[in-house]
Amino acid sequence: MAKVNLQGITRKFGNVTAIDNITFEVPDHEFWVLVGPSGCGKSTILRAIAGLESITSGELYIGDRLVNDLPARQRDIAMVFQNYALYPHMSVAENLAFGLRMRQEKPANITRKVQEVAHSLNIEHLLKRKPKQLSGGQQQRVALGRAIARQPQVFLLDEPLSNLDAQLREDTRAELKQLHDRFRITTIYVTHDQVEAMTLADRIVVLEDGVIQQIASPQEIYAHPANRMVASFLGSPPMNIFPVTYNDKNFVINQQLIAVTDSIQRQLQPNRGESFDLGIRPENITIISPTEIAENIATLTLEIDLIEPLGKEILIRGNFPNSHISINLFAPANWQGNKGDRLTIKLDLTQLFIFDSNSNKTLMG
Ligand SMILES: Nc1ncnc2c1ncn2[C@@H]1O[C@H](COP(=O)(O)OP(=O)(O)O)[C@@H](O)[C@H]1O
Ligand SMILES: [Mg+2]
Image (cartoon, rainbow, N blue to C red; front, side, top):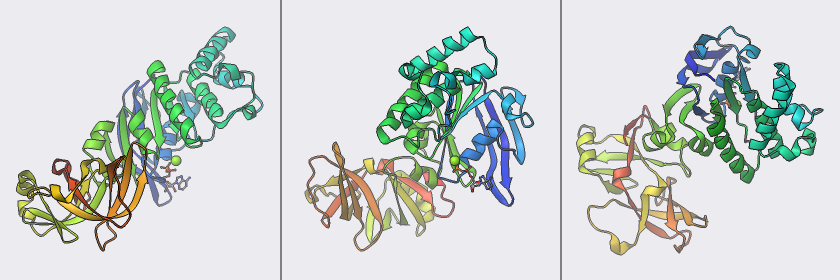
């Protein structure tokens, strides 16, 4: 197995820059996830690593070897795509063995490795079947198994769970994590799904428009997003972000005031009268009853727009009165209320994020 090192990789298609100056190094044995909205360049990066896509500039190393000019088949990489791409005329066992056969491994070795992989993916009972006799989830397991059986230097996965239904996606996600714990193959996994990124990754690379926004552990990305895009992309429901003006000790939104902490006041002293984007995650908002309202706590009034019972809690969307700015928050499962009611909420001021309205960079939080 090997580390993967990208140094300033750029790929242009005509005058479209699909990926721009991509630099990161995945250490040997780690599991990294590239995440971002559709079209942000995830697949282009993966295809460049695999050698399926040429690069316009930059250097790509697998292990310590510069592979820019090395053909795909010599890179010792296995890739799994969203559509399973099994050989339809071969049995599951033959599909699993295919890469090993190509490398002319001994038949006894092939049998042993196929058994081992089939066992760890729970597909032993399917070995004799043809792909069309399998469900989508089973086919994708076989595709994963075929890639793992080869024991490649690097494992590349491009949205491998997207075609599976929700329950199967969760199960397969958990299996993937266990497989990685077991085989420790250096893995780069592409997804647009932030839950997959958070749950699978040792480190997450967040991309937008072909540019890296942040590289960090899931915990770090969640707690300290580098900018507004990262803040709103990771987390479900996403962080609430709304425009405010800083007006001597208070943020002002919708003619309501949010009195801020001393430390924010110190930091924003020179910025009186300026506009910012304020961020707060739904879990850092609580509903309070009018009798609890006291001075020096930050409360806001919303009008309830949507109520979504989730079982263990209730997701509420409220709008600032007479505006289209909405806020998501959670209420306890036994909460009672109706659409159109007024709601008073309290923000945990230690959990506020402040973003620069122009650069979108995180200023505080
Ligand atoms: N072969 C191609 N020719 C022209 N543009 C391409 C080609 N492949 C990708 N692109 C463009 O590059 C950008 C990134 O695409 P892609 O890497 O597929 O994004 P993602 O996988 O994140 O959805 C998109 O704007 C896409 O239209
Ligand atoms: Mg893609």
